[in-house]
Length: 328
Image (cartoon, rainbow, N blue to C red):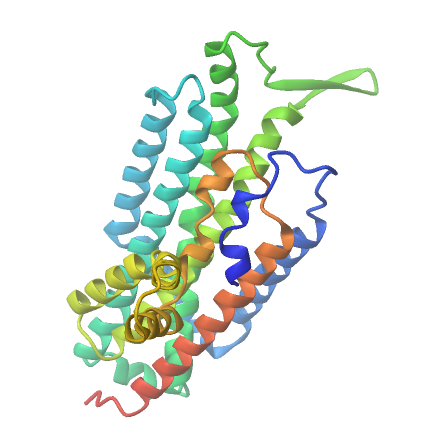
């Protein structure tokens, strides 16, 4: 993954040929269909649906949704003083807002849903039914991911609308020709409006950044679920915050230790950290998205494989840690 971590430095603003996202969309729909099949066709799905409902009904979900909405709207309305290029800053701030909101929801839900049930002895009730401990952990994680999907879906729609409007406002501030909001097509002598492709293209460049932010939240959610099997919520928050900070600095730590010709112990420690802690900087492409660069499909695919591998490893560790946990 190292050669993909700094891909934004050499990618042109506009690709030489139009990018075909058919394969990516098919993969997304396939994953959603598989998620629905697991939620409604297996025993794991019973726990997953209950966890999703619990996460959506808790006050934190509505609080994060309200705060994120206010932040996104304020970022769209308030000027950034960026020499009339506020759309780029709106993209970057919006991606950060979605990432932080999703991470908080995932970590908090893991603490309230898993830790509270273990400490409150209610987990024994579930495990007394034909559901084993692995199904319990996996169902909790899938339920958390589904709750994050709902949060991301709502905020993505709002974010897209704000970008759609902001493009024209930014052009007006630069005294350029304003791209119309709608493009009219005549069908059977009836004119039907469709969003203008130039504005839609700006939104399309932002969607890969949202997908990578979602993967980063999924990785943090897997870590939080594993930690919740043994530690209380406060420690869970501390561990996840530390992983979030260090994970976004692993690339810098390794590069600096090698480029600065540090001694072997420092270099070994830096590389050990990068192997244990997930390289969350892999999923951070907000700067590239904000500057109009197109995220390659192979980068999205490799990032998904990296995230899925780390999530599987963390859930496996969670199975091991929860296997001998005393619930009585």
